[in-house]
Image (cartoon, rainbow, N blue to C red; front, top):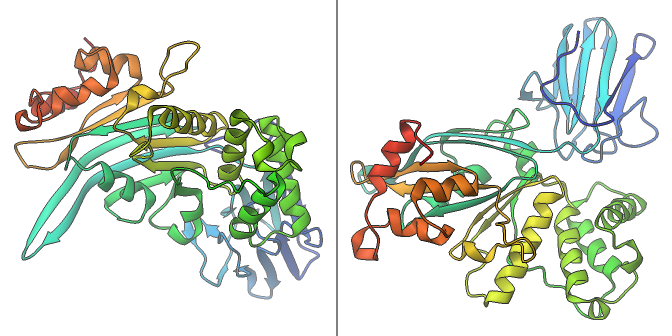
Length: 386
């Protein structure tokens, strides 16, 4: 019996009897004995050698690494019955000289964050910046992060990125980011404020330039196939040979989204993408981020103008979740004061606009009502409504 915590639509499992092979090559390229249909796998990713001492698994200098029973394989390691191998989005189970494996394609993200604390040294003392931050996000979640100055918003996103590791567990599809950082760092990343689209370049040229940076292990035909798939998903395949300056504003927006989707990031994080922009540009930026989330990704954003993230036809917020960090006066560090959907957030804080949440938690010298401790304690007690 094979147990999997998540299944994708059209996912199929296959098996291979490897007893007649001395070396079983595994990878994306056609020449491999065990070929996996996984774009995040390297062309020649790993191999299993059958020796007189048993089976041995090796990483063939792959880009995204090989995970055995939850731990990264550095070079080679002996295999035992019922060992579970993970190569990018593909799971392989080794048992009695048989390998059972799935072809799941590009797997959606499921992010689980449990931050016990993030502490830094300040001279001879240690200072805790944030603590007890726990939340989960699924594919298509668009999460707004709110918090006052010094509450720990940037500390939080750096912890999720793995750039500023905390005393924490950050799990993406069940894999620990901190333990497998080299393997997983390409799946969680920052989004720049705007992609610099060069007016005199063709759409395909723009996306190929990005692919050559992000998809170093891909052949040119594979890059072209990846780009074509993304353009088709966004409904703009017919534009690939157009110059950027020939596109409408909406078409440019879709090309910007395509540029972000060329790689295989599952989580996109933005630190104040609306800073210094006019209202129209802020709304356009939020539209782009919403489209990325709708493509099956997780998007997290710190914003000072969250009420610009509105669907202009329905009047509803783009955000699916709101995460509020507030600084406690008791220990002077950031705590979770709320996590939930937008409607519940506004009921919880008694406001009609998301931006007004800041008035509730900010200190009086910043023009707020200084109720951070109240909301921190209320959230910890499990009261989220009314």
